Every structure is written in C-alpha cells, then in structure tokens.
Length: 321
Image (cartoon, rainbow, N blue to C red):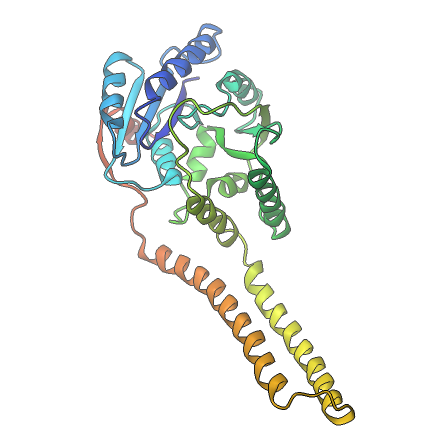
C-alpha cells in the first residue's frame, strides 16, 4: 500500500522544514516495518501564502524525492487546501495533518494498522482537552453538543487529522458543494471507520492560522451545511412568541381594566417593538445565512485553482483511474 500524507500550508515558512523532517522520520519507520510501500510520499499544499512557503516547498521537493508541492493560485481556506491535496495525492490511502504538528504524528502507525484491518476511514481524536483554556474548551464542547442535537453526525474532538482509503476518496469526490466542512462530510460517507486517540502537542512554530472569525465561520458552516433544524426552529419560535404575546395582551388588559398601575401607552408600544423587532432581525439573519449558501452553491465556481506543481504524478494518476 502506498501512503500519501497531505499537509496544507499557509505562511508556514518558520517550521515547515522541521515539520517535513519529523514526518519523514515517522514515515520511514512505517516503511521499514513493511506495512506501506517504499514510494509513499508527502504532498505540501501552499494555500496562497504571503511568505516564502512556496520557495521552501520547492526546496524540500528538490531535496526529498518523495515530497511534492502544490501551489494554489490564491488563499482558498484550510478546507479547500485539504481538498486540493486529497485530489492530487496518488496514495492508496491518504492522511491529512496540519503543518504545526500539534496532532501527534507518532499515531500514524496506528492509523495504518487500523486501515489495514479493514477500516476505510480512521479518525485522529484528541484524548482530552485539558491543555486548553476554559474559554477555548467550553465553547468547543458546547458546539459539538449543539451539532449532535441538530442531527449532524460529528466526531467529538476530531479536527482534520484522519486517514482516508481510496474508496472513501472516490466517494468524497461525488460531493460537489462549495461550502466545505469536511469534519461533518466524512462521517456521511458511511464506510467502516475507527478512531485513534492521541494527546495534543505544543505548536511546532509560528502562530495559529485560525483566528476567532475563522473559527466562528467554520462553526456556522458546520451547522448550516448539514442541518435545516434552525429554519424549523424559527417557525416554532414564532409560534411561541405569538402565544406569549397573547398572554401578555391579556395581562395588559387586566392591569388596564382592574388596577390603577398602568402607564398609558407604554406597554402597547414598547413591548411589541422590542420583542418582534429582535425576533425578526434574528430570523432574517439566520435565513440570510442559508440563502447565502444557496447563492454560492448555484454559482458552481471552482473550489480551488492550482497554479503550479512540482510534479505531474497527480495528473497521470487521474488519467489512469
């Protein structure tokens, strides 16, 4: 079995050489054990970096015969960079891992064993989140709970560290949507799967590429790309507000007719304005999120454009598949 390892890179110049060195060392050990072929390889995808990442990738491709580079024409985001690497990699099984190596590469061997045992998909799952601060750990746990509540099949504490067999890759290619959320998409493939647990490590070099805004955007994609429950919740919430408004109306009439505590005109004006105005804005925003996704999907624009590569192996494989 030929194993390919896909590493998306965005401004990873400071630590990319060390990242490749460590991954090569682990891969060499798996090759020496006879579980994967000697021509197993690495695919480095430059996601429109603004530093010298592509120059470093070219240097690594010249130094290591099993390292190949893919340069996207512009920054398309982490999920699209992963997909570009998955489309190009020519392995019988493909592992995706981030360049910061916070995901433990020592469990690559366990992933290969799980795949050879018959699992088409192998998820790398964090053993715990004790290293994270409360402000990072608590929202993440609540988010996974929310997705499961909305009916989204998700693997808790799994990022994008996983192994996919060739059958799973072919099935993934049948999903053409532009709004990618691979963590929710992969479990829908339905192939036999396994989980490998590991402890999160300290970042190898540089700073995190996931700002608060990007994390929030990815979270919104996870909800709106796989569940229509929020739309149904609007209708249910509207019905609830209607019932509450009727009850409040009876209370206002009671205060007005049977007590002397009523402030003329205040309740009838302020209460409906604040209540209904807030509900309408919230509902319009949520509906707008779904409409925006429909808009992007109907355009059918390419999810990424490859500007250049250090090899043509991916295209030769595609012609023979």
